[in-house]
Length: 356
Image 1 (cartoon, rainbow, N blue to C red):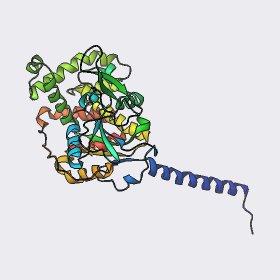
Image 2 (image 1 turned 135 degrees about the horizontal axis):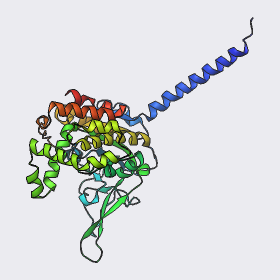
Image 3 (image 1 turned 120 degrees about the horizontal axis):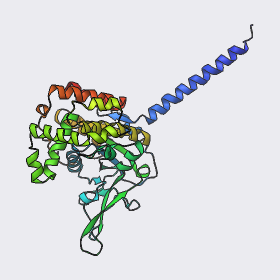
Image 4 (image 1 turned 30 degrees about the vertical axis):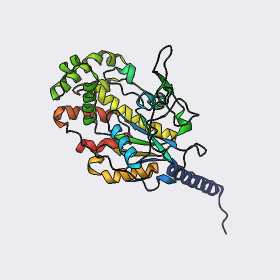
């Protein structure tokens, strides 16, 4: 019998080691690749929460770029489950008799806060509104450029109401909590970028004074004028920014509201990255699926949050179609910009909108 040569022993060791590493990789990937699109929910409840000793109910973020359908999602889940919901933004929430926001967990006084206390607490997960960061309208790169860390901090930041000093009533106070300790799941809500940005414009119509609304009518012409003027105001700052390279600056040309499209892509890039870094189960849902896949998306959310279905469905009123707000050239230029900025993970989530 021929004895194995030393190099054969070495090759065997290398092959065994590589096999072990490959097995470990796939096992870890199966455990930590926890971003799941709506419709692929089958194994989500098998993922353990990051902190098994955390109190119930546990925080499940509803993270969304503004005007993506957050309010509807919260109302739908609250009404159907007959369970309360929460928010990072205490000024939107119920207060106690002393004029203070009511935290979900007493040992986390900086939030999140109950939206109302009339309904029962969820047994497992309480859906919690967060818009995170990098989302300011009508602002320049010094305000909207974000890192993973700054974005995560913003996701866990908000406000609370406290008794006013030297006067009656309450006042708003900025707060921040530790997300690693109390956030255990996330729902990532996505909307068509073109509709999302027009919806942002419509939201500003409700907030801005009459002189602003007269300058920018609530129609295609008003939207395009607003885009042109906002783009012009912040163009000098964008050109000077060391974090916006020449390729991106060139791609800005021809994109109405190019800053909004930049913020939209940056926001979703970072939302995927941060929830992955946190190693929390994350369900991706879409605003448009309330219109064409309502039952499936609702079932996925209830299962993911382990909520009962005991109340009435809150009817979805489909938004207007904003295709006319953009020319074909606008859309082509905007997609060119977005593809330049988007990460592969975020692209998988938004690419369906390119061909809708």
